[in-house]
Length: 77
Image 1 (cartoon, one colour):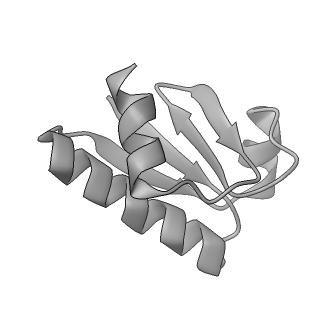
Image 2 (cartoon, rainbow, N blue to C red):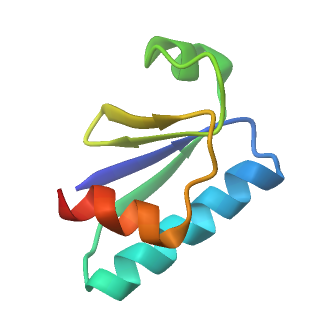
Image 3 (cartoon, rainbow, N blue to C red):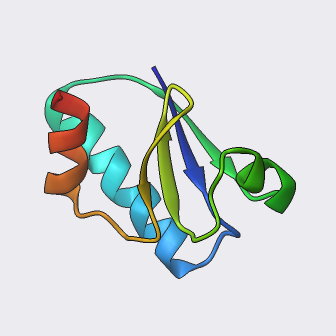
């Protein structure tokens, strides 16, 4: 599984990264976690509002800092 955090590297992006790492640990999952800060690459995913979360190149959240529980729910679906 490849998880991408799409955003410029702001506080919200960092919080989403932390919550995603906690969710992975809580569920006992392993994934490659990639931070994408290049605006051209972010736009290539169709994202215009950050932070965004993409799992295996499918954008699952845009413009919101998901809680650990919300990330867990997405990972389980």
